[in-house]
Every structure is written in structure tokens, then in C-alpha cells.
Image 1 (cartoon, one colour):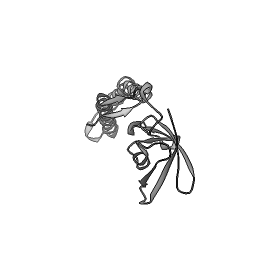
Image 2 (cartoon, rainbow, N blue to C red):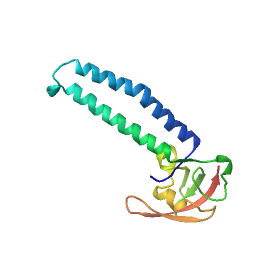
Image 3 (cartoon, helix red, strand yellow):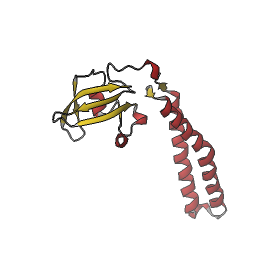
Image 4 (cartoon, rainbow, N blue to C red):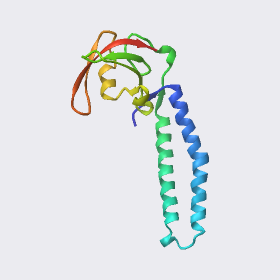
Length: 156
């Protein structure tokens, strides 16, 4: 598995989610299984089947989070600069029509485009990674359109 870059805040959120799944969710699923077992015949017990499916999904998510957390590289925010775009940068970019967009560049696990956090692996993120103020990058969007973005501002 490749290294996952994230902020200390993102790392903390993943750890909290993992802890919640292990302590709270596991107990809830275990209770569902116990209740379903009390209904008797397992061959026709849809509650038991559903509880076992819930357990499988939960354990899968726990395993995925544990694997992610083993491969995390936490950004040292004191080492970040404003000279070029990198994970952790806050940027203002403009398209060819002059429409401005403000984003924070994040690792893929922290991306939340609706709240202005785009991944360094997204088309726009890839296009502007490493650029300096005044430089432009081309992004091929999922719909196939090619858009040129110019970096207007970079901050921490």
C-alpha cells in the first residue's frame, strides 16, 4: 500500500473513527447477533443474516482503517511553504474565463470537495501540484473537458 499523506487533524479523525468502530459499533453488532440468535432456527433467520452482514462490513472497515493508519505520513505543517502548491496548501485558482476557486489541497482520504478540500490525486489537484503563483496547469475533468487553471494565491 502506498504512503498516505494527511494532516494531523485528518489522522486524528481516522483514529477516532477506528476507536468508535472498535468500542461502540462492535458492541452494537454483537448485541444484534445475540438477539437474532435468540429467535432460534438460523436457516430462516433474516435478522441473524443481516447482523452477520453488518459485522462483516464493520470488520472490513476496521481492517481498511488500520491498514491506512499504518501507511500514513503526517504533514509537518511547520515545514510547509507558500512558494508552490503541495498537500496542505490553501490556493486560489482561476479558469480561462476568470472564474475563481478557493481550495485546500489534501490527501485523498481527507478530500471533501463540497467544503473546499480537494485531493492531490484529483484532476484539478494533479494539475496544480508543484506550481507557483502565476503558473498554469491543465486538468482533464471526468466529463472529458480540458480546463486550464492559473494559480493566483498560495498560503498555508
